[in-house]
Image (cartoon, rainbow, N blue to C red; front, side):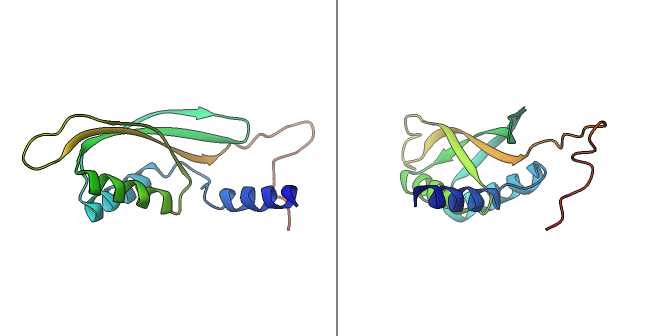
Length: 131
C-alpha cells in the first residue's frame, strides 16, 4: 500500500540523518567527492542552523569551479552519500576560457536530529525508549 511505502521511505531517510550536525565530517566528504570528480572547491561557508519540528537543518554554501562533466559527476555522487542532503541552489556562470571550467556556487542542506524536548512534569524525554 501507499502508506506502507511511505513508512519504508521515511524509515530509510531517518537512517541517513545523524544525531548531530557532524559538519566537519560532511565537509570532509564533500572535499573527497570534489577531488574524486575533479571539481575544485574554493570556499565552504556554513549558514545558521534552523530548527524544524522533526529535525534541524544546516545550509552549506560552496563556491568553486568545474567542467560540465565534473559537475555532473559531483552531483551524481552527492545523491549517493550516506548522509541525507538536499541541493537547494546551483549557479553556473560563464567559462574561464581554454580549460572549459565554469565558476559554480551551490547550497547544500544537511539534516540532523531535532533537539530533545524534556518535560519536568511528565518525565518524557528523560530516557530513551526501550526497544
